[in-house]
Length: 215
Length: 92
Length: 297
Image (cartoon, rainbow over all chains, first blue to last red; front, side, top):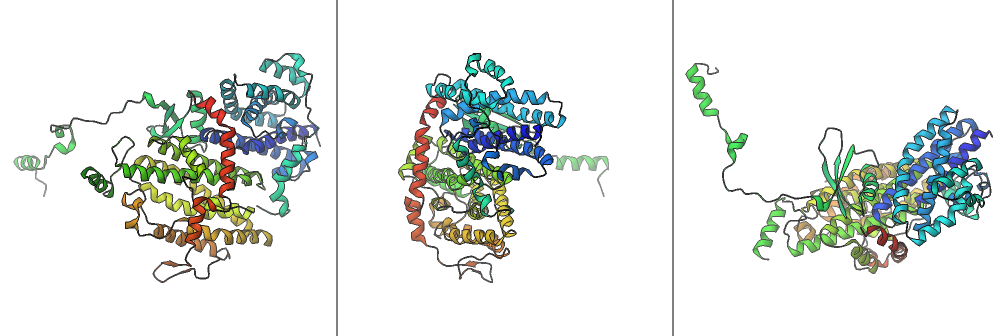
């Protein structure tokens, strides 16, 4: 697998798994208005994953659904941050906030890529992410003085660090106002949490029930 | 705070009242209303207005004849007929 | 009935529209709030049987579509609760009454889902039954409610098409998939036939008298059968009612639905009634601090 395909799958898997986690809030978010808005974010993330998979699928000779559903859990390239099951609002918003900050650093790097296709898709994703960032910032400002939220951000910070390539991490620290020594601890991409297996079991249950079927 | 939502479906059209959202401020109202009224690309634009900012007008003085300001206050049929007869231009 | 109320009744029966700030008889307001509240509760509880399938959707397209459908139901709940709130009942009070069992939600949302077949049947047929009632509400005498029904009906039409697409993919798939659809249909038929309520005459139905509803229960059920039984039969599916048939004059005959089951279910004794209310209560309780933080202006 080329470095390009590996990169595409890392970003796609992050968006798929986080979108999957975020979609779980549909129907049970704290307010009905927020429920509708949050569900759109989850759908956008799945949409980004699909576009990224489609790009990788050309090189790998397969299709987006096969990449999303038919690999074994250990073959996914997502970061531990997105795998965590956080069905609690303070942690959910803390993850949204940190993910958007890290993802922004990553997308900006991709937009500078010489690979025109990749840079173009990154720019498209970036334009939709504008609204995700506004949403995350809005909540972060509102919950700024809430200990539950602040504690969750601290707890998830090493996971956010692990989302990025090492050379991008200082920029992330700078943007969220953390000192450079806060980068020492990171939950690195490459080692999956047990939660990914559980997620994968549920995510692929129907698909595996009639292998190869059209749905 | 209740924000009333006014929605413009296509450019050039009037903004019509479409519903309301409860939100603590304009930022939340924006984030929430745009998804409730625009997630399918069905709206050109939205106006979000705090309910308290709306001054409703519902009572009218309806005492005297106002028809002189309206089309249905005019009936020219008879006079037009007479004027045509006088000018000899009555249609066959 | 006092003169003012009589005048109001004649006004709505003549097609008159009522706004939130208009005077209305107390009986009308109470019946309206109760009806609207049950509709809002139904949208809110209706998301629960479907949302677990979001997580199990077998393709990216189906996952997006199902998430969007459930999102629409939440959006409908928001629209409908807002109308009830403007009639004077706070949202928290409506949630409390829902969880205590004082307020009800429609029968279909008290039943379990077992397979992806249920996902198709619910989106295709349960939403179809609902849209028939909702189209009739477009003419509701209470204008704020009639107005939101436009958006609701427009969004529901995508749900039915999505549901039919899910069903068709399975019906043109494997034998195992076709069996999933038939099995789900066999389970959902009873609740579907009960959905529009027992056939009380329109003139005895306060909802019709006040022109809150613009059609009787049996009229709605006949519309459902006329529209959807042909769609079911043309796929080679069977309906688990040997007495179901269309008579010469276009009236559908069928086995008497189990009205005792309907009553038992809507009063909270359905197979999933308490479990779903408990689930709803758990998240309302868990996230109460968020509402306190965000709704304090």
